[in-house]
Length: 181
Image 1 (cartoon, rainbow, N blue to C red):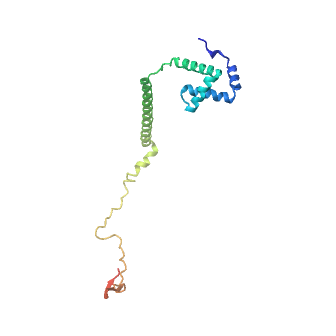
Image 2: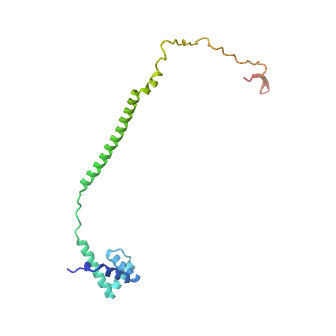
Image 3: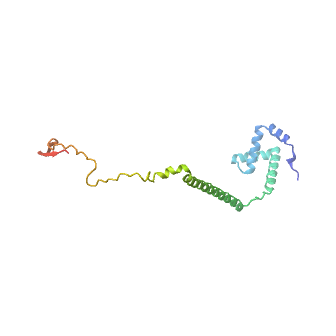
């Protein structure tokens, strides 16, 4: 079987540069025709080219041969199965969870250590002294609770005379006195 894969690259590049836009359009249309991606009008145009143009017939034959050879190529088998891939994904997720748990647990332990250490340090006794008596020889004032009589006299509110704010209220022609307090 002869193959055109041994053609030097520079000759392919030169051929591509030499091909004008009309030839490129014809090539693309022919390739789309082979793939079945053309409209009815385009299909009729390509069939007319194949019936009348010997260069198009050769190109068509080469493209069909190339397509056939590509379809015959073996598809490489996957090196890793789907089960192995999912196993690796879940193992990675588990490692992240474990790492997060270790980080948060370590942070919690560090916080506990710092709080325990702060209770042992010499300067921390000041915080404990707030709850203790300052000096046992000092006598504190007794706590006084006023139940019925207040310790401090509360002044009485000024009382106004009731006549001052009274005004007549008219209800359907009858006059009554109404207090506005």
